[in-house]
Structure formats: C-alpha cells, structure tokens
Image (tube, rainbow, N blue to C red):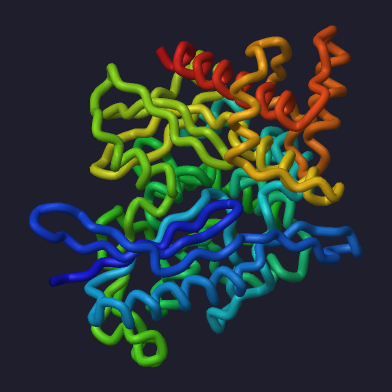
Length: 400
C-alpha cells in the first residue's frame, strides 16, 4: 500500500501528514507537528529585522518525514505547501544567504511607491492581477536594494520550493505560489519581463535571473537526494510540486466548484473568494483590491486577503506574556455568551498589522469610533470573531 506525505507550513506552525488509500478512503495520520516562531535579529544598518527560523522548520520537516518512514515503510512521494511571498536567497553554490525575512517586517513600507514610479499600479495589476500588499515578493526585492545579501544572490526560492530544493537539489518555482509574487504575468503564466525589468532597475540586480523555471502543480520536482534519503528513510521517494501555496491546496480540497460557490480559507490570514477560468484584470477589480492567484487544474483563485485569526493569535500571545494565559476552548465558550456586535473593528486596519498588544489596539479603535471597548478576554474574542465574520461577508459581496 502506497504512502504519500504532505508537509503543510503555516505562519504559526508546521505539520507533516502521511496519507494512504484504504478501502477507497483516504486515511491520514499526523507524523510531525512543530511551532513556527519568528526571530528578530539585527539586519542591515543594525535595524532589527524579523526573520523566519527556516532551519528550525527544516528540522521539524525532517523529523516528521523520518517518523512517517518509520511508521509506514517506503514513502512514494512528498509534497510541500506553505505561505506565500517570502523567499530564501541562494548564492552561486546554492547555499542559503541567511534566514528569510518575514513578510510582517516593516522594511517594505515604501517599496510600492518606488516601484509604481517605474510601472503604474494600474499597469502592474493589468499584468499580474495581484492585489496590493506591501510585502509581495516584488516589493521585498525592491526593499533589499543595496544589501550585500541581494548582491550575492543568484537564486530566489519561495519557502516550499526552498525546502523541496534541500530534499532534491532541484530549483523550481511552482505556479500557484509564483502567482502571489507580483512578478508573474497572469495571462501568459510566465515571469513578466516588464515587471522584472522595473524591479531590476530599483533592486540593482537582474531580478529575472534570480527567478527559477516554473513548474505546474502535479509536476515531479525530482528524487530525494541519496544522502537525504538514507538519513530519513526516504530511499526511492520523489518530491512532487503540489499546489504549494497553502490556499491553492486548501481550495483544491473544497467539495464545491463553479462560479456560484465561494469559499473561505481561514488561518492566520483569511482568504475569501471563488474559482474562475480566467483572471479578472479590470480597474474595478484592482480598486476592490482583489487578487488573481493560480489554482490547481489551471483555475484562477479570485480572492481577497482578509486579516484572519492573526488577531486572535496575537491576543492569546499578549495575555500569555502578561502572565494570564488563556485556554482557547473555554475562552470561545465564554465569548459565545457575550452579546454580539456591540463592538466591531476593521480587521484590515493597519493598526493590527504588526505583532503586539492586539487587545489594547482594539480598545483604542473602539474608543476612537465611539464604541464600548471590550473589558476582558471573552469580550475581546467576541469583537475579533464578529469583525472577522463581517469582513468575510463583505469580501463575498464584493466578489459577486
């Protein structure tokens, strides 16, 4: 019986799942779970820079893969998905040039303005179909201009592709994740020469040369390297490019299809949208800040990014740091008893973007908008969940 292993990397944790088809049913078993904890360290000019601890993630992935091999024997193939836009820079030897920078690091704040002096936002959207998010990969490369790391880089790999390269030695860019970068032409599904030229002029490097060959989901990336295979029990295992943007894989599993079906993928971010046959590249779509990302089987995931459970995660982290940790399940039950819609906030308000004291920020926004500020954890959670529900409903209405 064949065993397939999925590696799923989220913004707060990663997991490894082994799957087998038994009696016509997919049966899965978790063989690894590990935290994903960002780390702040001095960067260019000594400024504190928020990084992903990618080596810790790699260790967790290896442990989960080895556990799957021990539990089930031979593993047929491995697929990796993860969050979008963030990437590792590799040198000419293929070595990683430092931990990837976290998309919530503020270094990109001015990058959109700089890029749009070279290519208008209207033209950029008409080419890429990607909503304006200051942390999109194209803006990260612009923000890295003048750094020794970018000057030494010869390849940029998105996080799932980076881990796949460590397993196989192959450097590729899987299409569903590449479509989030702001560098891919949404119509031709190739790297946009016009956008890469504009980015190159600002970054001071040949951005097009950094980008690897594109592969479709379902493509075989390569066999696991012999030395890695021996260490992990993965001799004869191949790595397959799945929908490596985690939302692409999530949407592929939704048991509905067609233009009349919307979906919400709820995690640290909420992705709200529908699947289409072709991108929507109109000015009205750009003004509504909808994005066109590629899906499995050649679809377009037409969606909006909505700040998601990040607010709840940050609230829990804040209370823990204050010495009053909260258990989530009883807290949700308490929140259900709080009257709804007494206070709501715009979850996409930039005030909530950075890590920190979300309960205090919610209270500040409530007072500034003439609403009663939540007075305890249950009331804060009720505000967060009510506000998320309204944001989801608004995005579905806008898509329609």
